[in-house]
Image 1 (spheres, one colour):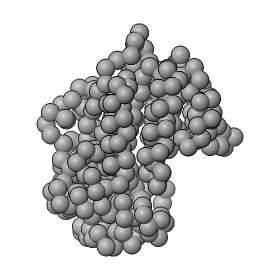
Image 2 (tube, one colour; image 1 turned 45 degrees about the horizontal axis):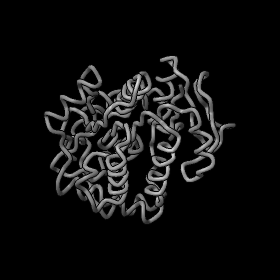
Image 3 (cartoon, one colour; image 1 turned 90 degrees about the horizontal axis):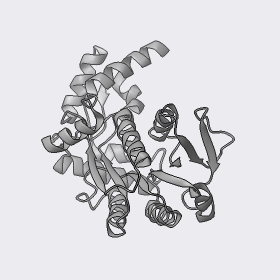
Length: 291
């Protein structure tokens, strides 16, 4: 019995590998470059990517449970649909699929719609899966260090609120569900979990948290045009527009978790989700220790 983790070297996948390795289960990590991957001692690296059907068949051989994280790429939908079909073909008894919050509502955001199409495949084929729908990651704001130190919070979150979530909480939820499905004697029913933090964070609220944390004034300056231009400096135009579409929906509609969804997620974790304020304080300490 083996768990296969995709996206294994990323922010979420690497955390899951450490937790699964500590749990003493057999784990494989899918990676394009096994020779370069830095993995926990008990994890086996397997070469491949989600577009290589032959490599995926090899990676899935003997696998009982799959963690499927598909990156935001132009061919994300093909990667997801093929991977789920191959997992079904391989007889995988449990899947944990990483989707996104509001996948079924924000239809004008390309990567949200791709993830919802994968959710529909899971539903129509009655695949034994847990669908995790995480909100925007706290850790995305680590890259704002320069802007924050210059006195502004630039991500265009808007004023309606987004229940952002910690990457560690996402990894914990995924690990709990992977182990639950792996240890079950038979496939478990499909489940959807909204994965969000405890606070409805607006642009001004985020700026205020950083002002308090850094001990200097930080102003919210979120602007969609400026944001898209900034993203295009390091990403293709399609991805910059995709991210713009996401933030536009945050501005127009917000993405605030309901009390029911927060209760369900807290119950799954067995504790309260981490707050953004705690993340900001820990991140500021990390920055200070390196200076």
